[in-house]
Length: 391
Image (cartoon, rainbow, N blue to C red; front, side, top):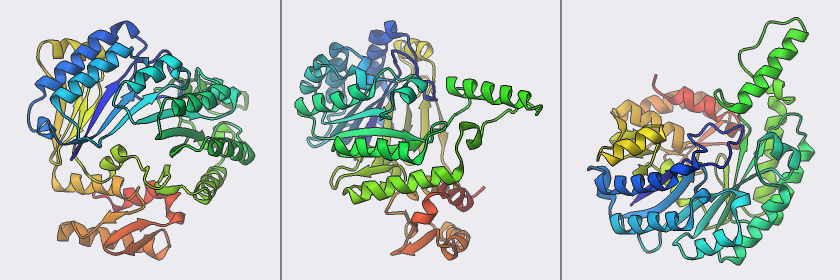
């Protein structure tokens, strides 16, 4: 089976922390949807070989809920015509909280959508404004209620921690509020201020200004202390997240993801378990176990190329070492861990040799031909994974 991802890059406004490809050119929506449907039809082999065997569909963004009812219906007509997803396919759409109106809920009832992912981020209105989110904490609660009334029985929400000057009690409040919503899936991420985002420019300007006031040299990069926090506080927040969600009955099945039993994200799990996927739209990526392909991150160029019957993409063939490194960076994120029994003898020897020091330090454990992160190791997972990779 394979997964299908469609990137919808449109946003009513840009969140200040977002580094994904998106645009506020809402006037281009219909032409873009037409182009995505056209791409489905002209996508060359081997990526089109997933037809008839798609078992997850994911509309991500951007903000897919910024499309009109007719545009969403058009996409699903083509998805069904070209790919014929399996009868029990997981079909997810990302929505913005303030987009969850009675009209959107009515639209979702008429589509094959059976899972909704929504970025709540925090229940603190001042922090929502800091992120340039359009919704309020009250709207977040109302959105979940509306989705339930519309028959959506699989809801995922995103939370964020590590805000400037956020305390452990602040984060505990957000977790507790999220638990009252009783959703099936929850993802939680530490706020990352990535270069190229609005927030990076704002915070870097502030850090530079503060440094000048202190007579220091201007900083070119941000660190956790610039946000009024520390790595130790970040660790405590992550530990609190794990404790509270597992106590509430959620499975901690991936570094940042928690699910009620039976409600793991099948689409994202495909990525982590090396399942092929097809990506459609500007900036979307595809993978067929041997090659990685990605479309251009420019909506205008993407549309014009597809209208000419071309796929505006680049690709790379993946050698054995690259495939090994890819497995390290995704499989070790999961609770099942990295299966070393399927590796070549060379890669298995290398991996086990490099892993020994982490096993000795209690950061990794070896179990049933798998390497698995311990709870202690989860907090330094990036360091562990980079150390196991072949450079």
